[in-house]
Length: 197
Image (cartoon, rainbow, N blue to C red; front, side, top):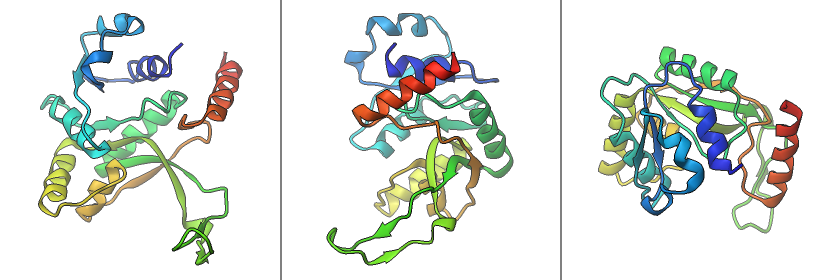
């Protein structure tokens, strides 16, 4: 089963889901495996942008006004659990913005030149950020306005909220919510899926 299909099927099971905006280039929207998803009236599309933040902004433009929360999720994270999504949504509703995250397990070094260690970062203060990232739509719109006005580049969605000086709640995620980026990740993901069956 394609990774995208895993992610879409999981998101369509989220309680109180009003709309699922899929940011996907038009030429891929007719892939055969998407046919069952397209029958769901909650699904709509947006075009990708040049950068992640542009894609998120395009997706946000398709969110209906009556939606009270937006959850931005990477399709490359098909293993997120519904419990984790619901916990992040609850935190986002309470605090305005929340993100799934797990404490860093690895020691992290900083390097200015990529050749020598500058310093070791305090691991107890570091969190690995995952998705979904949940934000009140107006807060995200205000953040994008700031990003455009100040020509900022952000690497994730809650960074936009951070630019406004607003709090972002860390919602404890799961280490199994992997981002599939290497062939080795696929092997691990298949093992996790097999253990859930």
